[in-house]
Length: 111
Picture 1 (cartoon, rainbow, N blue to C red):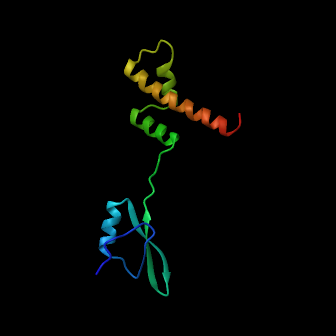
Picture 2 (picture 1 turned 30 degrees about the vertical axis):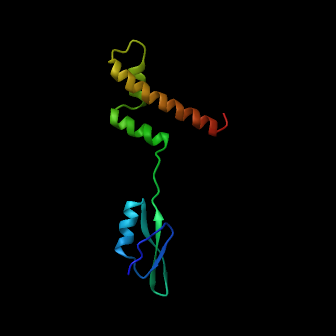
Picture 3 (picture 1 turned 60 degrees about the vertical axis):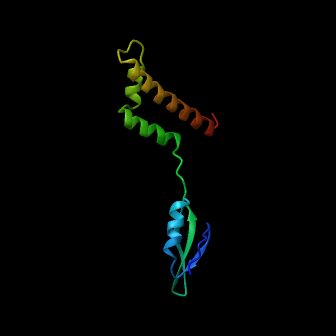
């Protein structure tokens, strides 16, 4: 009979039951092969890591999404530019995030 309760950190030797994989999928975990002991594979239930994007990754994604790099933003935000308010708002959103990144960088460098 298979164990019907599973938990993070649980170890399986040789093979693991399919129910453990189902449990992992439903509980934000996965099964990793962690070792081999005397020719027998050892598996462990491990919590999935959730990637939290950095501000730089968010900026890069939004630049791609909006089709706008730093130099284009500066032109759009320049005084008397004839771009639409929508385009200016998107450029300002990106520029605000970029300025936040620049400030963070300066603080880390001790300036």
